[in-house]
Image (cartoon, rainbow, N blue to C red; front, side):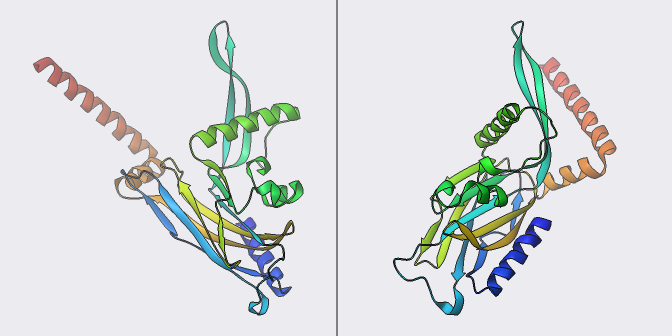
Length: 254
């Protein structure tokens, strides 16, 4: 929430300095997950409003757009496997306090061609610039190894995505980008942050929020597991016993 307020304040200050202003929106403010949910495609679009309606003259350096979609942060424990006496066992581990549960970045050009490393770190632009807050005093090379493992794991499940060139800008004013939401996306409040960048500087920033939540029977089960965990556990065990008994009875008959 503090980051969202900070970005909004930055946008207001930039607007007061006669800088361009972003007017962003998303195709869906709410995404409901039901039993048949196989993923969704989120369209992020908007316009760049220039002071006095004057667009940059042709030949000027074009503005770039970067869009970042983030899920709620979570604490993550990463474990590294090691082979001991022919058996794979847990070896070293590392915990992160604030890893995003989902992260997707789309840009009009590769992000390292738009801003320098310092700016990427400030705004967390790119998977190599995420501030994960490790709870560790391990050597930097060990921490880097675990970060690469976490990023690779979430890349393969579609939870971490980089899409350079995925943002289309029309006439220097309108922009749009599409971000795929995988079926295994976590629930919670997401943010879609849009950055207007020129000459390596962030000129404007804007945020829209997206709620992803379970619906129908899935929502009932999730709510019961969270709010009435003891009753939920008893019901789950009872159903398992009943189904096991029924399966055994049917098997004995045939």
